[in-house]
Length: 606
Image (cartoon, rainbow, N blue to C red; front, side):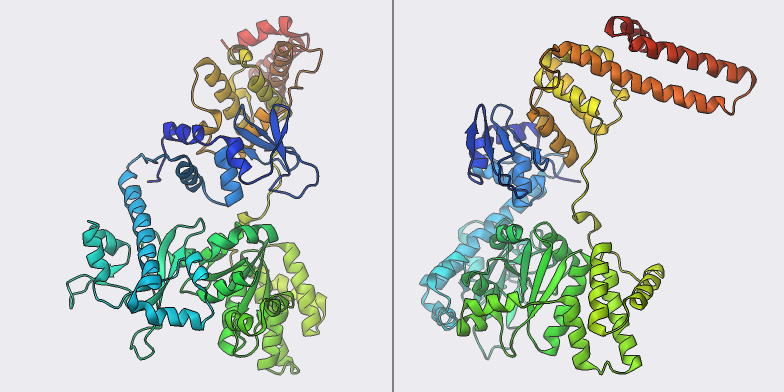
């Protein structure tokens, strides 16, 4: 069952977050009459077309069409879902979020887990800075040129070597041990029925989700002689799925969105070093190879990825696996090959940030990198080897979901392999027809064409948004089923109902519905009051729109009747002909103005 925030709570969150104040923390708003303007953050522009209406508490860009309320802005700007945006705004407004429809207990449990992770992260961090037993950890980060300030910025910590230190801390805090176990921080087994800490004598990295909440930990062993894994990560929990978390994304997402490019590294220290060096769009997969879910997550922010991995054979293979996943997700992928024996951390420490940025600038396309790897492992001079290499490269091209991307990659492949483009294209078409092309990770992630809405229905909605007194007229003379566009029908029905029976804010009512409906509602409410023209009273404009929609309905009915007449015979044909004539008379009456048409409207609704 999906979790739901009650509408009354959403209204409280909205009331506590004035849209001008919230957007003013993101944008440079300038007053323009009764509203505010800014450069749109969702498309590039030189002249502000992004408007914020404080009276209606909505925004709309007349350039790209983005629009909505304060929830929608946070969703789009921060690239989060609705429930996350609501939680962020609730936290900003100091409002406790309660969930309904049976999910309250589950959400309360998650909230408790978030608090535990944050508290434990601070506990580990204080231990690193203050505990005498953390001396080895402090020496280690010093040896890696990680300053105390960096440790504070990234909440790096230390888990003491005692067996049940965290267990004792939880008991003092009266935190249930079962909850700590659910967080993956303590564990027990048949051999050791008493709870013990999962992380002991380890340098601790706090793993955050994309909006900055601590959801897990990664601990590096500080004992070179220990017979345990070098790194131990939190197990999967209600908060943490390693296939869905990218280390550093909470810090990198704004830079990734601004540059449309992510830099994919291998470990936490590599990401930290990249950020320190000014490469602030770096992230890393958390304890696993890159997955389709990672790609979907990145697709919310970027359309290009640079993969940075080791230059040895294992690193090459890992880079190619990541490139396959990213290509299938529709990314433009490049690969930056590190010098032998180096990683981003060591490269920056030895040669500085400029060396890393230069390496990224020289990154090869994934296809060219793949050809170079094949060439280094096999002599492509023979026909059999070339055919094998071409097959491997065509498999890679076939994964791309975009025709444009496949065409560009195919041209490059023909050049790199030294084969004819026409022949390679023919082989690709045969491969695609055989169904060997893997399913794309995300066909729907790319930009979509704007949705077209009937102009008469849009105009009527705009009139209702600006002239509430027109609601009874529309309600009395226009059946909602006559509106062909679902979004317009929903918005117009809400505008009528909210006028007759004051209800919640329009955008709150639409909060859980289609995103296009929310965008359209903002556009309609922000539209200039020019629907009726300077010399046409709003009521007359509404009457004209009602008649135009009615004529559209009757024209469609008459067309359907004529189509049925073409195959009908005898009495059935005569009946259809009579109905068609009556509709024609009704259409003529509608064309003669409101007074003449009123009888038709009233009779048709009886």
